[in-house]
Image (cartoon, rainbow, N blue to C red; front, side):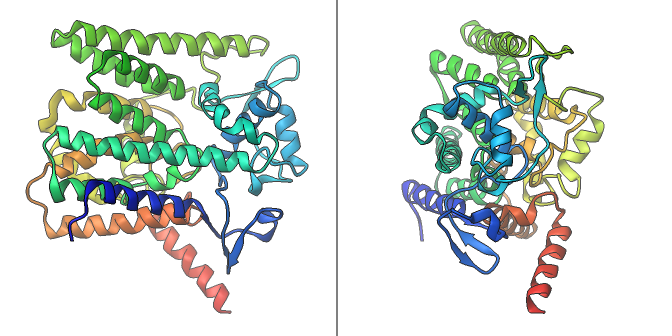
Length: 409
């Protein structure tokens, strides 16, 4: 049965929405005072942040909408005594705070303040309530869906239509980590959407806005518009080149000035005060690890994406920004990216991989098996991220087997 693009997108949106409402395993303490329906170790409940950087993004949003400041100390304190500032799962818990503390005792977050500001217009009406988390997650979910929609337009521009286009869209939506990271508060769905929108935009003003916003939301993204600008300059397209380079460098300058102002009273210098993501080295470990590490590699969970390697060499300059983005993240000393599922840092690159796969004319039986295997992990990670976070594929299987065995006993 052939599905229209609009119907395909609606089905994807429904699945994404349903995934945001399913949680598990969840302890009874985590859902106290949260409307929910328990089904064994799982619950159906409003969206909740899970782990990793997500609760720290949420505490920054709560600080902005409750106190209208960037000092997170009182918000972490409130969460520790049972407040909603870090979400339902983290009430009453002491956590490793993602902050730098200045000489006045203020604790400023080490994540992009501009990312937190993005949620303020949506979250402000719900300040002080448990619903701030739900709103922020659904805004992230909308960003992921917008990226999928724009990706469909990019496929049309590349003359990929019909069943090939629909399959490629479904693979991006369900056979990658995108669903997992769209159902929580992460930067990756936003960066993916901004990047794909830049690829489809013919408006210089929109291009400038996208490059500016992408750099502010995730500072390493600056290498993408810079590389695109250098390519445009090489091709003689000076207006596009100046737009991309000027807007991205302006955003980077704004970020540096803002961060230096925020942290003017700390006892050490750091350009971005970005916590542990401050050291770089040769990217060889990261290059291998981001693709093949047992817990944080992309290809071990989604091997069908490796077929893009047959196409990428023929893409030439179109893939240079993607290569630059990959190398920057591979050069992080903390390239695994902390708690998460598969290679979180590579999520914005996945549309390049799926479009390259879509352009392959002959797809073998082995590819089909790899795609179904990826579909399994994409849906499992999307509906039950707690099962897959920080685990290898065989580690997930072992964890589930142990859980089932304990229930049987």
